[in-house]
Image (cartoon, rainbow, N blue to C red; front, side):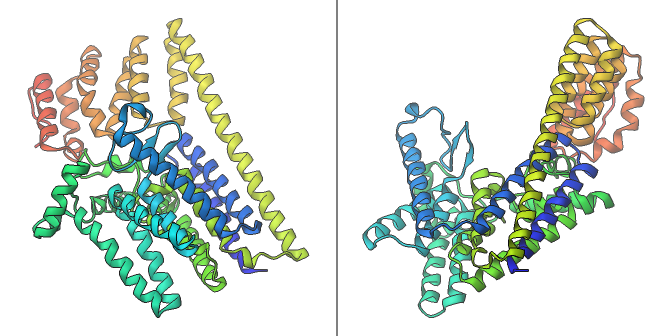
Length: 493
């Protein structure tokens, strides 16, 4: 058994535990199923890339081409905004709405790593490197610089001597834009001057050194502390971090759908067991890649470091490259013996079957939702209150805490006279979405009045729950104003 098999085994175990997570602990089955299919595809890329031979120069050329095209689109959009309506006007990144989210600075950092490892001619490299650095600087992405520093540190440790000097130069060069971005350093006159230029030219305000990542990360641990044993081991399900995030956030303005750290994301969504095997996988790639002196290890390390402080790991372009570089880093350990071929083919068959099964499961869920929605439309048209209740209950089992769906279903239940169910659905917003609950509280109380429910008694029994909601002072005042209007009482102190 070659060393590559250990990495294959660990990532397949991780995928199997993701499947368990989607079955046991998922809050939203639809989200978990779609994420399971995507991760199956990413791991297919990893398995295939172990056996394919690609020249580093070819990948470098492709990445440079993609980066230059993206950069010129960004620059053209900045100067000719109306000619590029499909792109975002955000100065920190551009978004191709059809294809998803692309962080230009992170792409620049990855391109810079590849050009550094496999440079073009001196002339081309001398033009590329300053351009890459400028794009990284104006992209406002500290994660890109973090990835570059991580790669430079690994190269310095491996080669020492002159490489150590290069690492120190890269570290200093990376610290300059990071310092300019940082609001805590605004008291230093040179940095303050640079920040004024940044504001006037790029319209960017300096941020704190952690850019609210400290709040994001601490929120994960608040969610962890409220988890059951089952959720600790298997998480809330892939793509479901938004639910504990909303429920445990310190303020309703800070409810991120992503942890901005791939390890924390796996921990809270798929549990401690999944995280263990993913960490084993990443460790094996780094250790074996360094032993093989693989050039593909460096872009893998860049992306792994980048994934620690940004949500680039949910962008298909970056996560596909992550697993591609992971597999290519193990090329020299590929076992082409008869036994090795059998193990590899077996692993490939398993992941292909798993991917097909995940795809069919997702299609089945989507078809089931579409069928139920057609039935619901028909039941509403015929004003069949009993059938409406049955169908919405079935839909609710698939997506139990989708805020917009709960509001829609409540309105539909009310339209056919199922006011008790309409009340229950709106009241359910309080479980995972206090902001939506506040927004629809008047509608909820109106329904309760029509149903003859004593509002004061209801509000009294919920006061402790209301006080635990992560509301701002303005939201608390709004909440109390609604309570005073309906029941002549304050609900939050």
